[in-house]
Length: 393
Ligand code: PLP
Image (cartoon, rainbow, N blue to C red; front, side, top):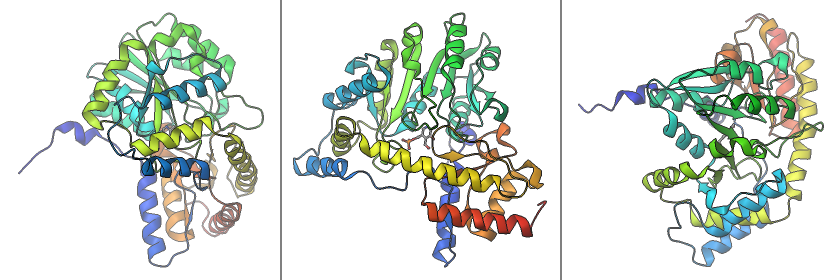
């Protein structure tokens, strides 16, 4: 019998994919399911981006590219960083990767080992913890609190750093809460990091273009004092509705760049060439498609928050970013995971239980409002009927 190494026993998953599969099964047997589970824009990729991908294939871009990505795309990323964050980065520090996840995979592999501690947001994207556990490092959750508007707290984060801390993972705007951490909090965090020069920072800014109500996204790239230990994670999946193309990018400090390049050579060689050309069209092309998508999400955000707060014993703070609502369901009497499961099986609404995002997600469920207003309203109505009929779990 073959056996694989024990580390795989510690590897987690993203339950959103399991919920997607279950919703698909139910739909296949004729159930009408509204899917507010998976986090991906429901719009198609804008046509000029699709055309650039098709053209690249027609033009013969069929072979390997450099492992770090083609130079014109790395230059386009540098321009994007400058346009959005006002910061100069060299295309030689930019790495093109197959999706946002790959940057976190590389960063966690670089710093995770038994004895090391890695701080990560909880509730947060489940892959952070999964990968930390895989490396044998100790995952140290940084609580992300509703009372703080789901922003991270500089003080609480800094208080969790020990002599063993190797990496701090930050995510704003955040999945699953929609929280956006204000500049003053990030200023305080970066100031506090001065006394912890051995702690690297991974800033997951994949929802950076999606903020509302005037909440500004403030990139960690804006702090020159941590640039030599900052890994910036971004990508096209959410901003340009390109989840299936698999395109992400990162900015690395010089000493880590070559390690990331070697990992790419070992793992995937390069990102699909046509996707990279489509990425140039996305970054250099008109940005009104992004503004339109964000305006549409904003409209749906209003619907979902209002609808959730009208449900019995449910309360939802207004998320300031991304496309998720994270209502508190504690007063319903339901355990969040049981509620998410019952909503899917009995009411035909797919959501994700908060505990899938960490222990501090215990009393919440996550709804993605990247779905049509009609579907959002249908889902809310079904949830209302369900909770009225089945209060208290
Ligand atoms: N980071 C966060 C916070 C996310 O929510 C996601 C996707 O849901 C990713 C990274 C990964 O994105 P990608 O699909 O580009 O790998």
